Length: 511
Image (cartoon, rainbow, N blue to C red):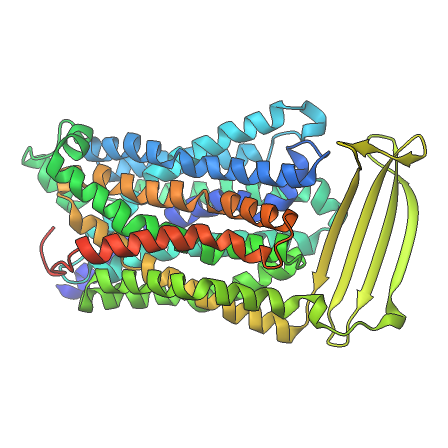
């Protein structure tokens, strides 16, 4: 009997996980390609402003997630888990495919960023309804005392989705020339998602409704107004707020620091070659992903609270030392230049606006195998440097190719951050499911999860990058560490609230 129930839950896990993984893949393709997208859908006059605008558009998808949680959470508690997250899957897949079809800013002007913004909002709404449905669905199938273990498989899907997005991008880059990828190849990962969505839809179509929800529905015990019962009831609202401020808020910033901010930091602050960054992150994610299962399983033994709080505390204490080491590892200031191999080439080149640019390319090599490339583009007007805001318009792009010793050092430092992610994220689905009764579970758990992850976590790349840019312009020698204050402070508040008010509940209780 036990073998049969385990086989049954594996079917539930695989169907739920595949759909959720694809939704995360769709959602993160945008973030993984933020550097390229900033040149396609936004004005090219100010690359820094375009990149920040891209990050802000990326963040919009997170900001609307709580609204998706409310809308689809209500549907999930009214009509069922299965049909609700089939709708979210199709909505996400359609929006992702269409982002890959939008013409560039040069072709349709401000309609380009506007259309991207609308589609990002649809993605956010879809994801707001997906996670709560998948986590609730799996938890309601899981045997008593094993919810942490079984729901931790859902927790891997966000990281696996990010990993697959990086691998698809890497494969596309390797098949195409840099010029082809920059021109149209970046659209391919968006188009690929529609195939995966179709397969996942067919699998989900044959799933049964959650037995716990089906039983409640047959007995007439489902909610007629999930929103009112979730947030209008003071007793339940207290648990919603506790879940947000004591757990998901801190978990959200740790998640996005360890994976998305790490990627953004390597590409934009450390100027590491984009393909190398995708490879480093991919290896660290492969090494770290099994620990979602480990910590989910461990939470069934020792409780959810102390594992999640331990992950937050380690992140608070170690983020600054880790990022300092990351930056110092590849800084060319700490390397010996082979001066005889340094080359500087200058040329005049016509740009897409049919005006001329003066381009200075400097390449350097270092004794440890590091290669440095700087391309400085000076926009010309009537033969002289074009003046914008009282300064010559100069765009500088730096790319550093690092050696294998530095690669393994960075992989290790990213892996440690992924471990923090697995500690806070592995047990959280079971933790949230156990906080709320079945009739309002989908709605009640989705909102704090998506506010914590969508608002506090999703805004992290844009806020932290802004802090770094400001500190750099102010001449702060450790400007690259300033972006970490945001996740450290948020995680610290969550740690204090969680330690004081969250109880280590009985893992074996029926839900």
